[in-house]
Length: 145
Image (cartoon, rainbow, N blue to C red; front, side, top):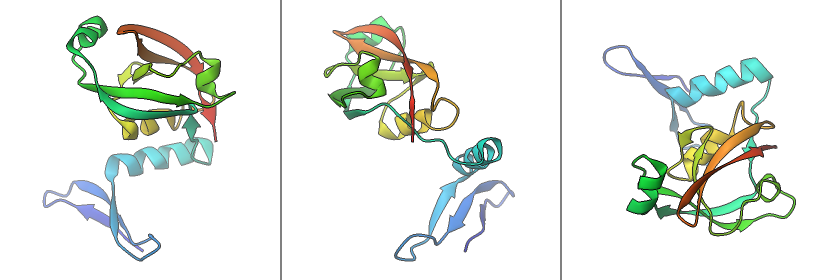
């Protein structure tokens, strides 16, 4: 069960739910709830995209930020690429740093998951990486689960 979490001015901040296994209550932020509702209305299900990588958050050097022509303090260092995955088919290699999906900077794992879900799942999508400190854009058909 649950209901809206509303600010004093009437703005909906999120949706409360007690649906966790231990009965703990959480609030789903309003932007995520709306995005999920729109995806369900459009596709009838939630499309989950994946690349087939293992990654960890790393700092992006000042020189790499200059090459990117933007300030971006972190990205995702690729530490593993699954065989026959969208990432391997796109040419990703261990050591690449993923910095953007579809032109939107990716600073940490949560942002990558958000960018891969929805409309890009199953479609060719530009993914920006740093390889040897130099930016490259690779079009990858994002896998769908």
